Amino acid sequence: MGEGVEEGTVTTDVPARLDRLPWSRWHWMIVIGLGTVWILDGLEVTVVGNVAGRLAESDSGLDITAGQVTGMAAALYVAGACSGALFFGWLTDRLGRKKLFMITLAVYLAATAMTALSFESWWFFLFRFLTGFGIGGEYAAINSAIDELIPSKYRGQVDVIINGSFWLGAAGGALLSIVMLDENIFPANIGWRLTFALGVVLGLVILLVRRHVPESPRWLFIHGHGKAAEELVSRAERETVAHRGEELPPPAGQITIHQRKAVGFGLIAHAIFTRYPKRAVLGLALFLGQAFLYNAITFGFGTILITFFDISSGLTGYFYAVIAASNFCGPLLLGRLFDTLGRRLMISGTYLLSGVLLFGTAWLFDSGRLSAATLTACWCAVLFFASAGASSAYLTVSEVFPMETRALAIAFFYAVGTAAGGISGPMIFAKLTESGVVGDTALAFQIGAGLMTAAGLVAAALAVPAERRGLEDIAAPLTQRQAEQPNGR
Image (cartoon, rainbow, N blue to C red):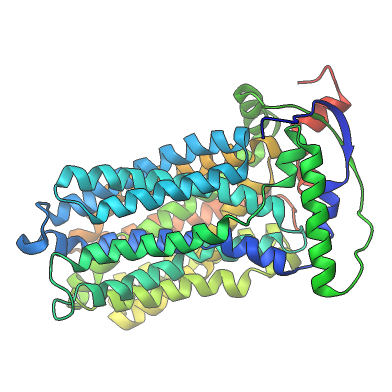
């Protein structure tokens, strides 16, 4: 898009025209092409945890220990995800959503394919890092594109459900591993490789669909491609009218912006931390709260079931699949309420409810009143609400900052939450859940519950009422402010 770049002050109704569109096949293409990547991420994370034991066996074809898979490889995946989010998030704001969501998926596909071909531990570690690098970039590019293409009436529920679909992949990964690691079906050195290969196949299918997903018109007109933005929105309008057989209402308004090729990092940082400091605090609280709650439960769930309830390691995958299903049901059933009851009530409510329920679970566990089945039921209740809350964290940081900062804002808060959950979380919770002491595991639950509850209180005070509002009404583009106040920062 280097040709035909316009510069100057322009008035456009593109955002209003996108927001007034009724739901149509055009939007389904966006959801399928972009949203399904979270299923891949869930599959990827779960599969590695479940194949750790197999990889450590002498006949796996790889000289590696289970501890290295769940320790070193997991840490490298987290490091890759954090660095990929920041690097690709920065590029997404500068080069566009479509270029980057194609590149990041290609990185994921190549790295996963190479993981399946691992012959030495260093090779496995390298491509686990690169797989995380691609997945981290996906979070920034995809969330920003989805929010800018989905009408404001549906944005909350679509974003929450899509982010929650991670757990569909997690459930699939847990069940898939049971089959792929069965030596009666596949040899020990082949089954785990085929598990990674399946992720490549699914990614290729998504890549084919994603080719037809358009660039964000909002990004286009701000970065000097006004004509391309007009053409894209006009095509979407024609397809919607043809699909639904009804005329569209007039757009609700226009905005005036100053087109520019790129926005400097200094201006982006100023917008996030100086112009909107309360929103920055909100984003950090939401990501840290959900990261620690999830690590308090999911990091040691298998160890807890085996240590305290004598559940066979071969059966923990079934328990995980049940927990994953509850995680997806939360966003699926509660998502619509984020657009009707509103962001503040739903975000604070899901965080507070999950925190309180986990406190209750800790008390029941510590007092010896739970079995493996009833503990799993408690976890399901906690995660039903926590998953919707965690998904709303991504929704929040993707809609409360100016458009020019969106992808980098998502990347920053995602990286902070992922680093906290993936680095400090395991360091804290591993010792507690592996000690074999009931009180230590109860303490792990209480830490996660406390941070989740604290984040819920922050959301009750600071959450932005963004439901059914255009993105430009929630946070004016930096270029719009400059057009109205030429001498302002």
